Structures are given as C-alpha cells and as structure tokens.
Image (cartoon, rainbow over all chains, first blue to last red; front, side, top):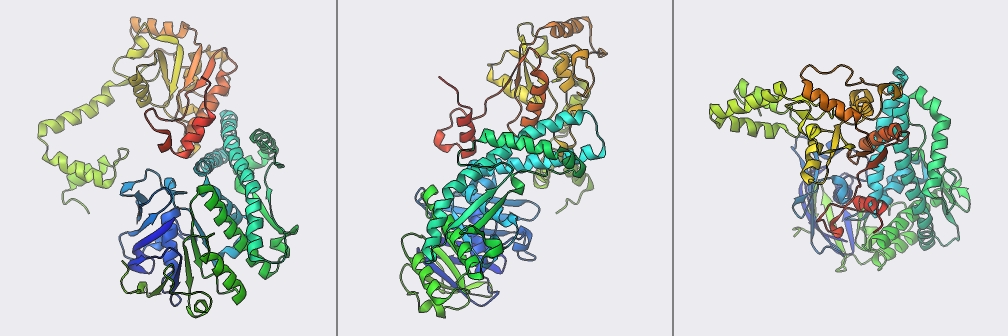
Length: 383
Length: 233
C-alpha cells in the first residue's frame, strides 16, 4: 500500500494542508507542537477511522471549525487507485467515502488500508494494564479478519444489553427475567467464544512472527512469548465447543455475583495477555531496554503478520520513536525501513541532524517534509 | 438555522419525530409542503389520521389490518400449520413479496432489548404460545395476556369462527424470521426454548448471501456466516 497524497482540513494544528509522499521513508521534521504527529494521525484516521492517540473526534476538530476532513490518495496491490476521504461533523459523526462512494458502515474500511503505528505511548503495552494489550490484539485481528471485528462489535452490544438486564434484575426481580437472562447468556457465550477462539488461533500463528521480529532487532538470544489468559484453559487443539462449555461453567460460577453487581464479570473483555522473555514476565522483570525491544518487536511482528495475511505492505507510522534509541539501533532500524521487507514509512522527529548521518535523505525513494505551525513549509509546493 | 415562521418550524419539529428524518430532510419536506396545493396537504393529513383511527391489530397474528382478522388469517387456503414469526408488520410485507410463503404469520411487535426497555412482556410472545398450546400449558414465567380470553368487540360471528379455526389447527412448524442481530438472535433463542419442548419444529431463516450478489463483493462477515450455515446438495 502506498499513500501518494494527503489533504487535511481543520484537523488539529492544520487549517488546510496538502502534502505528497515518497514511496520509501518519509521524514517529517519540525519543532515540538508544529503538527508533525497530526499528519500521522490523519493517515491513521483514513486507515482505521480514528487516531492512534486516544482522543475524541471533537478535540481533533479545530476550535470554531464546522467540520474536519482528511483525504488520501492510495494505491495498492488490489486497487491501483483508491481515494479515501473521511469527514467528521460534530453531532453527525464520521463518514468515509471510497472513490467518492460513501461506506454504509465505518467498519468496512478496516483492513482495506493496513497500517501499523508505533509511538512513545506504546510503552504502555508492556508496562501497564491489560487494556492496551487487548487493544493491540484486537487491532491486528480486526485488520486481518473483518469477521472478527463484526463479532467483537456484536459481543460488545450483547454485553451492554446483558448488563442493562442484570441491573434491572438487581432493582426488581421479576420471575420472567431468568429466562430472558438465559437467552442473553446463550448469545454472549456464542459470540464471546468466537472472539476467544479467534484470538487463540491468531496468537498461535503470531508466535513465530514475534520470535522472528525479536531476532531482527536483538542479538542476544532471548525467547519472547505471549500467553493468553482467558476463561478457558487453552491448548493448540482447543475447539470453539470446548470454549463454549468452559464459558457456560464460568457464567454459572459467577451468576450470583453478576446479579449483585449488575455487570458481566467474565469474558473476552477481561482477557489478559502475558508477555514474557525467557519465561519471565516483561511487565514485572524486564529492564527499560528490554521493554523497548519487546514493544518494537511487537510492532514489527504486527507489520510482518499483516503484510503476509493481506498480501499488502502496511503503512508504517513511526512517531518520535528514534529519540530514545542509541545510534547503532537507530541505524539498524533505518536499514530495516530502507529494505524490501518494509514498504512505505512515515517517521517524525524534531531534528534532521541525527538521520543525515545514517541515511541518505535525498534519495529519490525518500522525502524530507518540514512542518511548522500547522503548515508544511518544505517542500514548498506539495503536488 | 430556523424558519421565520413558527408554524413551519413546528412542522419541521414534528417531522423530525419520524425515523430516518433528520432536521435537514425535515426542512426540505416542510418547504415542499408549503408549495403544495391545500387539497393535497389535506389528503396527506387525512391519510395519517385514518391509519390511527381505522387500522387495528389482527387478533390472531397481530399484523396491522383494517378488518379483523386480517386478510392472511382469513384466507382459507393458507397453511395454518406453519407460523412465520416476524418482528414487525413490514417484515410480513417483505416475506409476502417473495410469493413463496403460504403459511401464516405472527407479528411480535419488536425484539427483546433491555437497553430499550423491551422485555417479553412487551412482545406478543405469550400470544404466540397460545396459538400452540392451551393457556394452562404455557410456563408461568412467560409474561403477557392470554389473548383470546376476551374476544375483541369488533369481531362478528364469521370472524369468531376463523379465530376458532386457527386455534384448532395443529401447528407443526414455527419459522423464526427475526433480524440477524444480537437482539434478534436472543429473541429467537428465547422463543425456541419455549417451543422446543412441544411437538413443534422450530427453524430459523438462513443468513447469508444476497441473491444476485457476486461472492467477491460479499463482505467477509456475511460470507463467513454463509459458510457456517452451508447446506448439502
């Protein structure tokens, strides 16, 4: 996948920006707060209808502007010309247009323009609670498999309905409700087991991608692993029916507690992923350097996984990730970005200087873009 | 943006109460109404009132009708041993358009949705059970009224005979034609749990690919459902 041209309107720091990109590495330089990251966010919006920075659409919209808009011209293995436009109007929400035609549902765009983002916030992946890890997992599988995203949306809806019912039961226990709850349980188990089963299958595949990615950036032979901790004990042969059975048993076990609290207490929304190096949990035992390497390996593995599954090179968005790296690692990473394994990438940094020593910035496959005060100041005209 | 006339603004507000009419569409409709001849506007207004005054619910299937029971329940040649359960009157219309179905219907009036405050007591589920078994044989925890216990006032002798004939017919199959979303699935499951112990088969309409649609254009979620629900040839 390649992004040729990007246009922003009333998007964060950018009033009206147009910028053209090169097929290789696109370096986006500029002072802090100039609007470098905003360009990556805009690309991410087109690919997944939201930013990689957790934030509401309302805050992405420039104050006082009636709406924001992002448009990109892409080409890929399947489509030689793909014009994607996303518009957000407060109160009306977002709409996505592909080659001028509106999509019925926003989720249809997911997977069409594969993307992998990597930013300093990603340290939360290895260092903080399970939410981030579930989000990482969901993001990859959703891009690779539309059916997964659909199941997750329905699972969430079912859980919302069921929570409402549980809290109604808490307020007044009508005898009719037991049978209604049993019906919601059946739907919850059906959808929840699908989600768990797909996560399990994915993680079995992903293990080799992770090991390979880790090996590319770390010479010390450490073995990275991901253990999936969910409601059912898992082996490679676990079937969906096994998961459904365990799910029903667990629901029985927590039934009283759920009624008391008016909440669905178990299921894939409570799943945990445990990252480990040589069997030691990263969150508890890893050094700063190991955290960083593991985080980077996860992102690279995601990149290679999506590339293989979708037969399309994802866009690689690297926001301020070079700053904490030492020169050797920076060089190794840049060499990787320049090579065939990785397609188009977008790199933000405050200063050009450290890159100039490591890579030829004026190569025809690369481009240097200077951003200042919400504008692209160089190259002068972006067309 | 508001119209300078309060009456027009009032019309816009009323129109936005209708589903899928936003403020902009309502403004366009209101502006159009302003230009229409008075007689036509009266016709629309009368048609709106007529549906509320004249249309009633069929005692048997709960479809909308001018005459109770409805045309479908009255038809002597329709197969009364098969009942197709749908959410709304519109769904009856959709299935009738296929011209394939010769059984009768049962309109639930919605689906179970705690978020919208809709439970089985708000749906015609007990009425459905009454079509299958006597009131005594319906589990006590199924809320609702027992339907034909009090015959509606608008029913004459002929209609009463039809109602009785339906009640006497042995139902062999219930086809659940609710929408394929989580609320529809849950409602279907709820009903199937009630009907399964009876000597009545329960089926669910297949979900999958639209006819005339190319495989390559089907979205992945639909395609994977269609694969799961594949049948043998």
